[in-house]
Image (tube, rainbow, N blue to C red):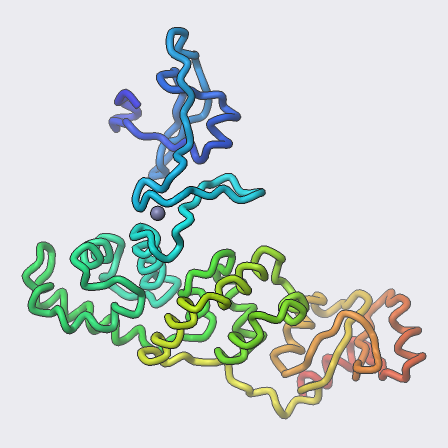
Length: 328
Ligand SMILES: [Zn+2]
């Protein structure tokens, strides 16, 4: 944009979000627009004020990635454009490393976007696992702008401290699309172990049975773990990381390894809370009553599942009985 003074700050860039948004706002090259700035948020274009009458040049979406020149993809139901070169595009490689060292992943102090880009451009790192081999380049890195013996040693310490990582954070750090913190935790709780996760990741029916995992996340998991390059990354990471799996402190609970079905309204806790509690004690939650069901937990206003359970001779527990036994 032509620079403009907005509340004492000169603004020459404002966000238009994506091309759907540009089309919706009907903005072309050289039009006059209104922008808004609030706090530290990047200023954004709120609306078109006046069309440029002489010029009517549309803002065209790029057909190729500006970094690696690969084709651009736009997926159905998605507004944003993506570079199709997932594993070859340097910008995507950098993005993966930034995600890997970020706060919610390995949380490596002193390793931000700037450092990642610098070390990547100097070819000291190329893949996420390369951060564990930076010691090799000590003499070169300490001489770099913004570095020194102390800051390099601090970085190595932070990297070493990050090597113990909980399973859910490990899953999150892989940067699987649609697997944010919540889904990473769901997967960690469900599979408890990395090998189980990997071997189950191609099993659609297993994934579909996991509470809380949506179809986009499921197809993304299948896609991610089917790629040789990702398996290789995980294999390499296992050499550096100690992954802390959720302990099986539950074996001795009444409901351990029992199949439960919930029905009706519970009063002490929500149904999701009850399911979660049962899962942490090692129970398997099913959605419908069958011969496999060990217990039907029935709250108020339970419906047809009670009849089905009675028919099949499945034991029925009310909420009080359930809570008593689960807290044993
Ligand atoms: Zn690219």
